[in-house]
Image (tube, rainbow over all chains, first blue to last red):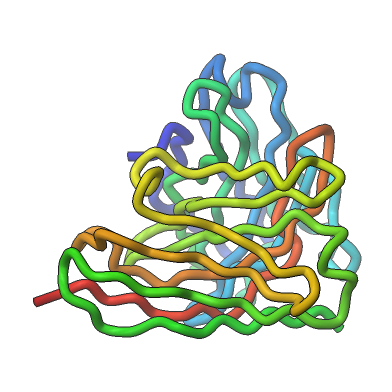
Length: 111
Length: 123
């Protein structure tokens, strides 16, 4: 049972913009802890997509962007492409649990 | 190129033990926090444990569900990360990933992942 809640699925047509929410609480995102995002393509290893709320590692397209506000964070994908079909997970620290937590995960489908 | 290669996964009976290892290469192993993340079949990601560097006193952290049963350790001379799994339960069945951590604002994110090693707990 994760303390970071994501929608199970989101979908969009190629070229559209989709957003994935990550809802936490005052002991994690709301406490100011940074949020990171990972992309897991089907049958592959998770890959770092966004770190420190809004920073993209080298090689990640600028179609991906992240933000944090209050007790939530979000990942936006603009110009959706077929290759973006994957599971996406948010990740942060929780001071009550004294450990890292992942979101419940969101499957992105390109229609 | 950063490489993390896990080994040691197997089929084990409930109550049994296993030792997972992660061989690291392509970076100065002793300078990085390291950890384990697991993923049960068809499920999401779950952080398991991590270990800090010498600079941070080799601090150990565990998710509550494994604390007291799992032990994380590192051997900087051998560029190796280990996870001892004792008193295994069916719910520990998962693919276990070795991860390298990058420190950011006193916490970390996971910038490199191994391919994982499968632990199956079943009678």
